[in-house]
Amino acid sequence: MQKLLVTIGLAILIIGLLWPVISKLGLGRLPGDILVRREGFTFYFPLATSIIVSVVVTLIIWWFRR
Image 1 (spheres, rainbow, N blue to C red):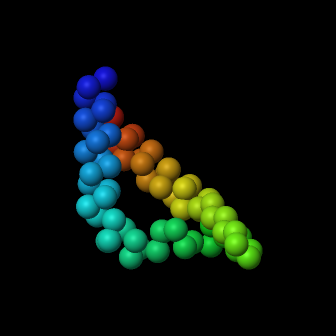
Image 2: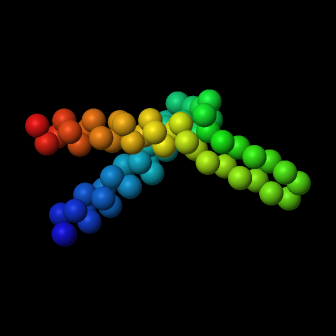
């Protein structure tokens, strides 16, 4: 359990440090991301971004377990 928490903490730290680079890739503004703007209300659901991130993380985990 301790190794898992340390690994998750390190992953969050790395993502946080790389966020300026990641944001330039266009993640979060892909076609398929849902954005609804109304007066006094904004709803954002990054559907396409979530799918891409999920596939990438799955491939990385699969690669490390091999």
